[in-house]
Image (cartoon, helix red, strand yellow):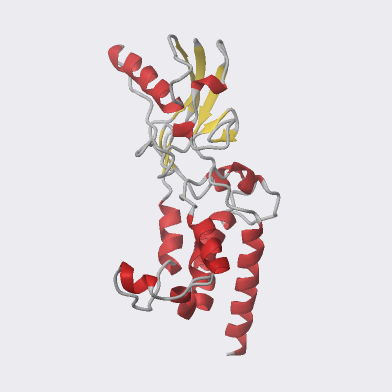
Length: 249
């Protein structure tokens, strides 16, 4: 395969960026998208040029580090992470645009790499439990209703890649925040902080500069793990309940 790439190049957070065009030949349809970028970088290095900076880690669809906007879609045309996207999803001779996440709360570090530490701070604001549960055997001794366990497991699948933010017209982090809140709030171990957690994490989300949610649904469509959009409605109910309780007290 021969692919023409239009890649966002930006030296650092303070520099202006622009799209640069590269032609990559000899691409196997079985290559992952990241392997194709590796091929491009090998060619750039041999030419003495600066390789394209992009994030990656596990390359197994688990960590979410491989976050790219491909032809305008978060993670590309398939519902998967970028590292699990293969070149057989494209055609020989295609022109592919590759850009970083576009969100005020995700400033560009270099090229395709963005700073997603805002997510870490949202989790730190309330992603904890104060009830001591001991090691795994003791923690597992606490009965958890199956419906709650299933809900917690579903929301724990969020890998924090940021596709929901990148896909949202407003750059909202509501799907990410709701997944983290709902994950802990339905479990008995997370019950003591249930009210404070939702208030603290939503407040931190707002402080980080994420946009407001308008329930357009792009976030759930872009999520590679299929976190359901109704989780936002569930989190909103938690927030309203906690807010009313705080005002009464």
